[in-house]
Length: 507
Image (tube, rainbow, N blue to C red; front, side):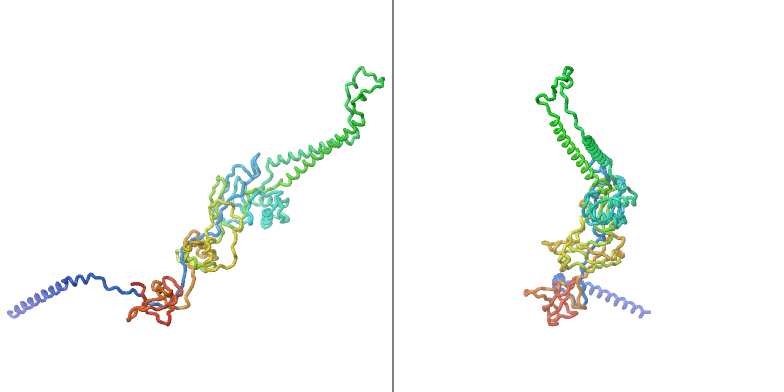
């Protein structure tokens, strides 16, 4: 028992010594001299920042955000009044114009369709390059009339010869067209009817006057010479042999007859002239009298069908000025790229379009620069008619379109329009955003690549990279190729660069 107690005491003593020693060692490790503390605060010695050379394929792309839109937006307005003028008004100055059936946004308009109604009368859509700018009716002629005649024939209403002259055949076809739409073609108004009646009455009066005078002439008689007071004096002596008409200064029967004939001749000539003038006025008026298409009742579009994209009027509004915007039915993507990227693009390049949901569609660059700028659909000008001027049809050099749009400022953003022949997942997403990716080049297989930051240009204008090896840093001359995603293809002179080498990108 005594030996056991001694052992326990010895073990406790040894344990205490070990704990004290460990504590002293730990405390010693936490104690630093002033020199050691200063050295710990100094930054490590600077060295070059390097990145390994890689061998891989490169694909250069231009990436941008785009917006899905309908093609060719154009402002829409009416060329004049719908219907005829009020009593006493001018031909194209109608009564207060009010929309009685508003156009519907999103509607697809085909040739012959009714766009809207004003004062209960239709506004109809036709295909043609010449904009509607006047009332078309009997007596009018020109390319716009010929355009109307062709449209009527396409719609199945035969106008007769496509002559460009608005005749009775055209008027009849217009009447049939309106009737097929549930409307009555514009007929002469009360003022026109009244004027026609007055002209017809003028002709009748002139004819009556001439006939009366001609009938009187055909009797062969002449009016008796005027009698003097002596013819009726009660004291006149008939047997005296003296005739008062032979007194000095009196006209002889022969002279009287000659003067009457001259007067009659002049009167007949004047009556005939009055009849000719009345007939001419009636003929001129009748040539413009009949069924018409008022200036505001037709809109010609260069291409149909179109889509009513925006509508700026509602029922009860006046249709003056812009009434909406029309577009084509096909989808396009509008985007903007920096000027430096625009210089790399040209028409016809393939485009990959990616929706927010990851779905993809294909497109083609169809316009660059000013040609791709969105149309000023809110300028309030004219109908959406007429054909835009075309530039040269020759194939442009890469960047030529962008240079035109940014002349004098190559850093300016470049508008970009992309046609989408097969919308696929883009259909029904007008107004949505898509990612636009345009491939502008690819490497010939796997090539050596380094970061763009590794390329340095020496005083002789040649490109070089700095390679770090065990012996230090050395310059290697390289030929720079395609660049993409911050990397650039390099071809070293003399094979002095290989995959796995470290090139300096910073210090």
